[in-house]
Image (cartoon, rainbow, N blue to C red; front, top):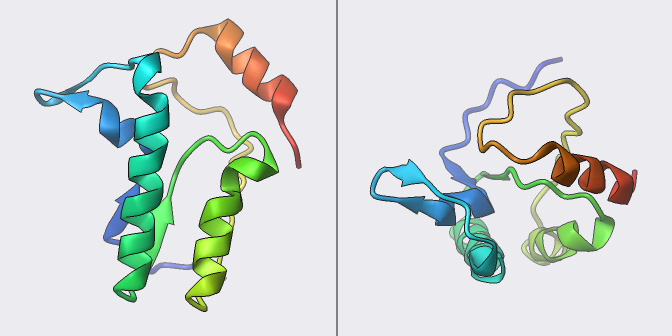
Length: 106
């Protein structure tokens, strides 16, 4: 059965890269972007909200803080594994995508 709930609290590290209404990736901001995403997610869960995170988690350890935070608050976790072909909305270079695929852990 398809889950049709709407999640109003959605976070991703790329949101931190939005400037003046546009998107601009800056590698040096990645640690701060992920810290912001984790904090915003935990605050949302702490308020009892259904919360979605849509980051590119290539390895299990990258998801660990989110899973631990959800478990700590007694929240159910649903992991969606996108397996299709998707538009590259942030113009990520193909070699970067290939490196991410090589790091993938099921």
